[in-house]
Image (cartoon, rainbow, N blue to C red; front, side, top):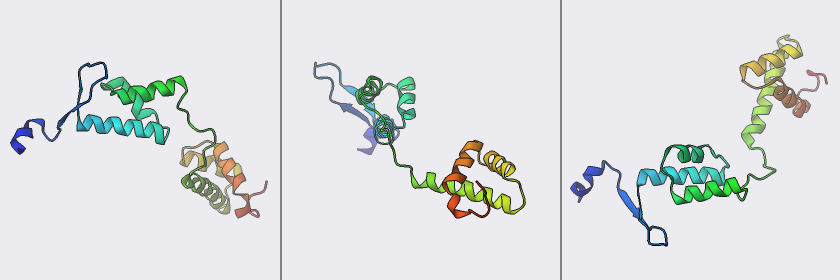
Length: 145
């Protein structure tokens, strides 16, 4: 039986049910199906449309992918308005604020410390300032408003 499938190099072609109008069945491999499934999952669960867009541009898209893309374009599938910030985002802000505090403890002026931390972390100075403002309670005596 292994010899029977050796010509596929570990990728087994699948025949999926075709359209209800009696058209040709869609032949795809497990690899293609896996990539399509990942793209659809990223779009619906995490609102990351990049993998789906890439598949629509480069690969032969499956009907499920086309359906999801049409839903996004029509506005039926939307990213929720208010998403709770992930813990990693909160900790990133604390890290930025503490980096500024550390630089200020070494004698760097506030504005210079903010710009240095922003440059080191590839973020804007306003992002660092917001992080300081949100975490002001941690080092009130060091950073003046």
